[in-house]
Image 1 (cartoon, rainbow, N blue to C red):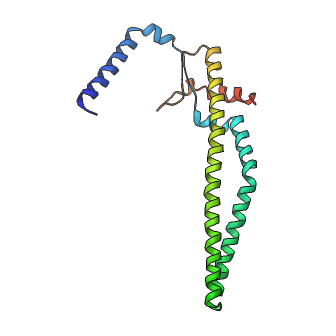
Image 2 (image 1 turned 180 degrees about the vertical axis):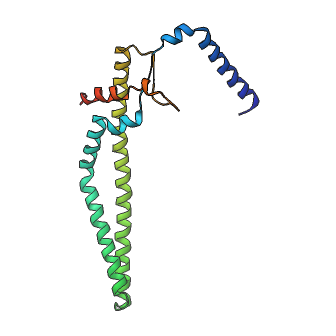
Length: 172
């Protein structure tokens, strides 16, 4: 950032401080809350339901990947163990079979990861939407002037995350 940008930022900060000082009475009446979004995404009932749903949805694909991984490991061990006693053509055929299976495994693993991440992002978007709706309702009901979701520091007395978590329990 250049000097002009720094001066502009500094002027904006000084103006904000002056406005806060001039309206001290109004500032004292301002009700601020904070919501820990990471906790919501980790501990809320909708987040836990989504996690279970995704685990169930991808369980068979995960098991197939594990089965293929074990098969690859077994093939590799067999190749290493029997490479000396195999004919050159058998060894090449087994190497080719191993390489083909390994490529298929890597492709399926990549596809699984992409599909899982897409579904996870869809579920997270729904959770965020529900949480934001719940936060707005709570803020309006309890007459908050400002609710923050990110902060470098926040006092525990303005943290309303537990209230939001309780409200989210009832939402299906």
